[in-house]
Amino acid sequence: MLLPGGSGHAGVLDRLTAHLAGRYRVVAMSSRVASAARPGGITADQHPRIHADDTRALITELFDEPPAVFAFSAGAITTLELLARHPGHVRLAVVHEPPVTALLPDAARHRSALEAVRAAARTDGPAAAAQLMTAAMTAPGPGATPATLHHPGDWLDGYAGTRPEPPTPELRELFTRLTALQPLFLEHILIPFTTSEPDLTALAASSARLVPAAGIDSRGQLPYRAAAALATRLGLPLTELPGGHLGPVERPAQLAHALRALLSEPPRPMSGDQRRAET
Image (cartoon, rainbow, N blue to C red; front, side, top):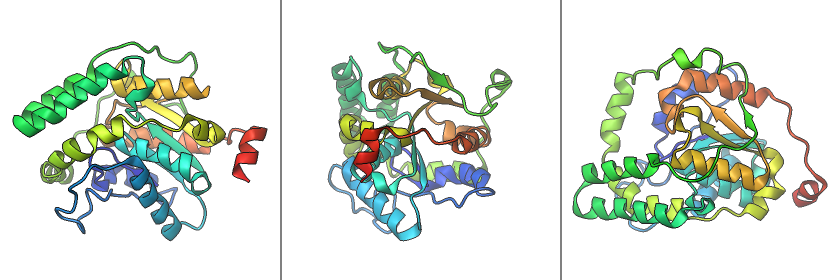
């Protein structure tokens, strides 16, 4: 199961879905914000727990057994909530750069910067907000790369000489349509999601099925540091994948190759505490 970031339109993952569909049954889920069935229906702040409940409901409807879930950005925050609240519905949760600022030592600075993004969207428009968003997400800060990095498969070999895939005409057209969702994202998702605090106790109880991940090109940036902080807090390795924060969209072939290798690895054993939590 794939969950996108931002306002949550599954179409941005069409190329990744195509690369995975030869081996897996793949469901890419749009969020309630991006759903065409709810035009103009979002007027209040969104919260990861509600989106996690949506995801659990779709898993119950479409899957006979718990799926592996791969999600990035806001979708990864939803997936952390899903694993914490409904662990029996997830076989493996690969969370790519969940920007959970509460885990960082400079959390207050990041909240202030993201509040400025939302304020700019309200007063100066989306272009000004986009500039501030880029600055907020890419600004360096404290938080070292974990001592243990994991690179599944052989994707790192020769990676330095590669470039992102150019967007297809269909993806360009989708990006144009998604500009209509940007105000909803900035007003109702950005702050509630990035300032939510993951339940580390519940996640620790399911850590055998949690894979914190980050794009190798994001090193030092906010989403990477948040993923690294999550891995450190839970005593897990940080899995590096191709690309940056938008690696699932910009490098779908390489990321699918790495993800297939990751999903083929033997599962980590659960501790006694984790087994008791399952029962």
